[in-house]
Amino acid sequence: MICKHEEKIPIHCEEEMKYKQKGNFRKIDVLVCENCKEEIPMPKHCGVPMLYVDEDYYPVYDLNENEILEMKKAYEGES
Image (cartoon, rainbow, N blue to C red; front, side):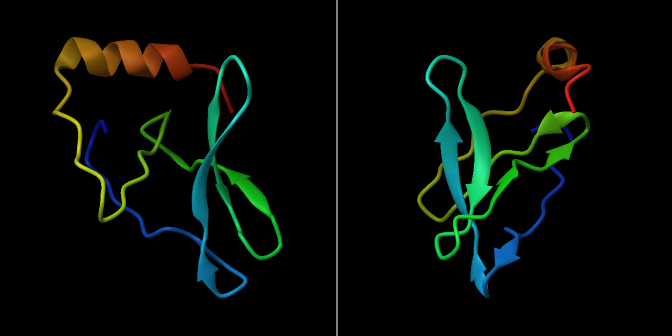
């Protein structure tokens, strides 16, 4: 969301991993292999989790400088 860097969805068991949210209160984004249930955290770029996009998704608006700083601050210190 910050710099518009794009990556392909990771492949596992010869298929693209699928987006999923985990958790009850504070949800986290993960990618899951539908075949073996292997799960990885959502990849990060510029210090924040990347945004999952598929053909049915409409992108969010561009962030302004204050929103970018706020987002970076929110994820600061997370690994």
